[in-house]
Image 1 (tube, rainbow, N blue to C red):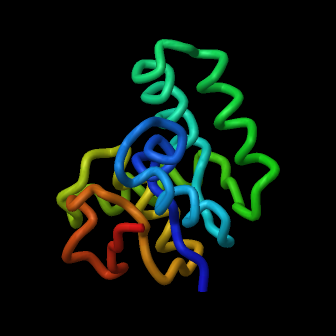
Image 2: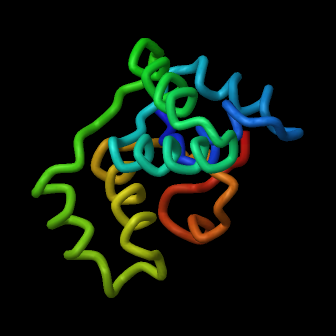
Length: 125
């Protein structure tokens, strides 16, 4: 089964930090993420690096990866809103979680412990 990759793992893959290589390795495997994660990651990489072109190129490189990048569409948003009272997540994380749920992901790869204690387990890279 595939893993869902959260935005913070993508950010750490393209910025200087102690987890960079582990995060890059996670992106070498098959994974699922969504457009919202890519937008969040591009914004964070841009702020950290001070270079929005570099950030855009980082995200574009994922389009050539083994990952599946899913759209944020009306159905996904509706499914997130349907679950909004059930899960202690902000709307961004809820959209990511619903993406993982509806695509039968075995785990969520993330540094965000808001994904702990849910039906899908969270692991760090």
